[in-house]
Image (cartoon, rainbow, N blue to C red):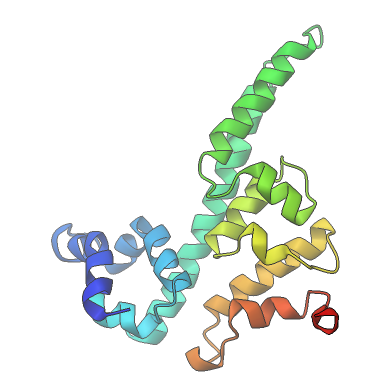
Length: 199
């Protein structure tokens, strides 16, 4: 992954930093999805800081990135709730099951449009219902995908959430040195059944 390629990928962020008149933090908030995607693709924080020529140090950038990420995840969650509430509230007690089916389809269509993998693929991999779209979106934003859950020992909702949150904390940790952070495979290993003896 060359620096030239990184600069090209960062172009929208760099352009805003130089031309929009927005603060560094505002630019990070505007392009948080891009920054998270690059981090999950393997680019180190220092590479992003150097390539973008942002005036933050690596430590400050890490802190701000973590803040922006939390706000971004919170926004995703609130948008999911906002979609559900207006659609459910107008239903009267006298309504038939047809409006309910329409509501369910609308929620699923709106929310799943932002997913890389379909709710059905996620449901099969995690054993969670297809309505757990918010959780699936959070997982994908941290570079976790259905195949990563193959062989997981415990498929309870709380355990799947612990896996996702633990990985997010590991990726964003300011305490761990970059080279000491586990790879996704190393992290997931402790949650999986070891099947190597049957080869």
